[in-house]
Length: 213
Ligand SMILES: C[S@@+](CC[C@H](N)C(=O)[O-])C[C@H]1O[C@@H](n2cnc3c(N)ncnc32)[C@H](O)[C@@H]1O
Image (cartoon, rainbow, N blue to C red; front, top):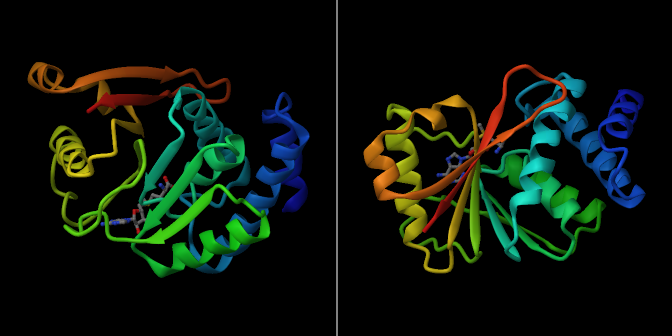
């Protein structure tokens, strides 16, 4: 398993500094080791996760110009851990409400010696919680509270919840095609850029939505 990870990471991230390549391999080795018993990533297919999830996270990284980021519902650390590895000078906070993920993320932080990472067990919808970063990101965030909403209302709800935290000026969403179908009203209410991730590995594209608060 480790060889497959190393070969694929070398192929996909051949232009990155060796130290970052090594950290990505170490992170993925831990991720799939934990996944075998705790189901912490969306797929067991290492090649798919690297070429889709990790590659897309590395593209998202190029958009983030601010110095502090909170990844909400980070789960196994995608994209938060990748952003932290690629941006050692930015503070990356990963929050999740489930202990399984928090325990794993703490181990990654400690084993990879990622001093710019903060791991917090938090419920994003807790009224007492306030995000302490300049930008917030969501990837595959799901929760009972918003599960029945359509994409647009879900997005509005997440943005309005983030707005209560005064330090946040931007929200990034790494998502699929529904972001292209938002209403005229939504675009009047929110200033937003949508950027397509050109994937060399898949025919289907994902998008990075950048919402300015
Ligand atoms: C589908 S997973 C996505 C994980 C990761 N972002 C990814 O794309 O692989 C959604 C995550 O959101 C977390 N979550 C759901 N509701 C939450 C809440 N209210 N506060 C914090 N985390 C929450 C879940 O525990 C889960 O880890």
